[in-house]
Image 1 (cartoon, helix red, strand yellow):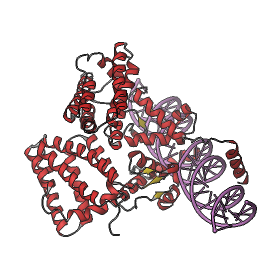
Image 2: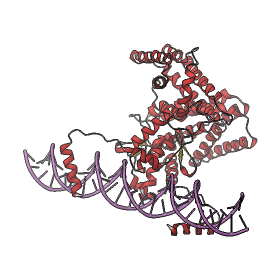
Image 3: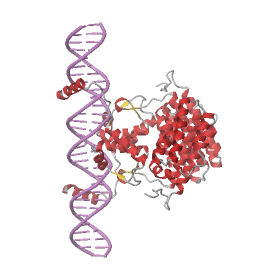
Image 4: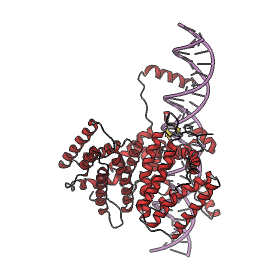
Length: 241
Length: 241
DNA sequence: CGACGATGTTTGTTATAACAAACAACAAAA
DNA sequence: TTTTGTTGTTTGTTATAACAAACATCGTCG
């Protein structure tokens, strides 16, 4: 114990700048979260603690913490024997998810429309909107998805209600793995109505009803398209490869 | 290892009925959850792993899992050094919570009104309603809270959307510790309009707008009363002791 | 007397080992 | 051939110990 204290003091002496060390389970959590959102895990895959620990190069303890978190958030399902599995998304679950998302994101858009906002914030959203359109034209779908996500949450952040944003983020995580491989085909289809620009315009105009209507329409249409991709068992699967 | 296998077979021989063994961290999670909902933890209390483990009579490992879950759900806040603390509730956070609750619970009531239900389900809800009224008259406020909670979630379950119920439950957990010591004084005040019976009546009649309106009114009025109890710093504290 | 620094204590984090239940593979008997 | 019992393996669960950072305590020096 003496040695520990001495070594500690020595470290404080030599290391001048203090680096806040983030826990390993936080890093593991972030990596798993991103992998899920990007759809790098096939639905139905069982994530075993030891294999994940080997991938991360740590023991199973931090991995266990990360998985526990994800299961608590509903991002990972817990299968038999409390194993964590990447959830499938059936047509029914997608329908439920759509109802909750419409309620939450519609409300967030409404609240955003009832507030006044900085010009800088609005300008940045407009820029992102034009970026998204050029990304669609260039078929850069993977980076489009990133901008698409940031645009939506940029609007929700304007509600000024962090709890609302946090809850919405949770819902996105649940449908994340599926969205990643079905949206790309979808966005190229809708050249007709761009609910994104309409929603932003309504928010700027202070039109709460319009803002909610456009966001709900955006979510509903995407969900309707996704539902049409379900197979005979009601499961949503990757179309080609 | 041979001994282990043999002992296992012996156990299977003698123990005829299989008892599904629930993990320790699940029990710890449930106990902490109930304690939070019942308001047995003072807001601001730091929950240390070792003290909780000593209370439960286990090691810190299952307790850590339970606390990790609760923090991931947003039920417990994580203070400095990743310690888990029972969250305070400010007037602003209560306001945010009210917005989200109105959106979610209003939508659940609406969905419930759009469906047909068994007579047994409706009768049970009516019985609970009368039980609640007699509990108020008898000033049995602690058991009233339990029935009140079950009545609300009975309605939300009628929406047929488990995800919605789950998300609402999460919101209740966040305001649980505060509700427990401010609602009792509130319920005795409102002998005027009983939004509960009105909401149930609307659901039975298939009146979606009415169901949503009554539930939202119920939530809003309670939140308004709670907000009036906040002190000068915006914090909600236990009134007397 | 007050400020600074050393030291013990508390507490979350991580690794490791032992354990138990479920699964898989294989061999033996009907 | 099919079924059943056995055995090895996988995997989540739990306890324990070592570790590190923050906090608290107290003595010493200005």
